[in-house]
Length: 138
Ligand code: 9YT
Image (tube, rainbow, N blue to C red):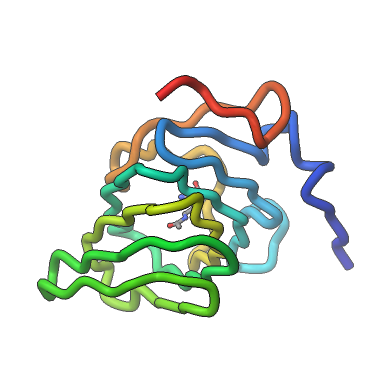
C-alpha cells in the first residue's frame, strides 16, 4: 500500500511548476501501478495548450472555474467543481482558468516524471524548491 500526503510532496521532484500551473504527482510510473495520479492547479487568468500524443488522461475538477476548448472537435466546455473529462482521443486542447483551477488527473500509461513537456504541448517543468503554493512571477 502507498500512502502519501500533499505536503510531503512539496520540495521534492514530485512537485513541479510551469508558467501556468503547478502539479503534484502522487503516483508516477516508478510506483508500478500502470497509471499516474496528479493534483494540478492551473493559475487564475492563464491559458495552457496541451496535446498528450502518447497518453490518455482523465481529469476531475474539485475547485475553481474555467473552460476547456477541444480544438479537434471545435467545442468549448465550462469547467467547475464536479466536472469530469477524459481525453480518449488524444485531443488537442486549451485549458483556461478563470480562477485557480484544481484538477485531479490520471494518466495511462503513467507519466515517468521526466517527460519533455514541450512534446506534450505544455511548457518545460521545473521542480518546486519551496512551498507548492508559491508561484514564479507571471
Ligand atoms: C490538468 C492537466 O492536464 N494536468 C496534467 C498534469 C501535468 N501534465 C503534470 O503533472 O505534469
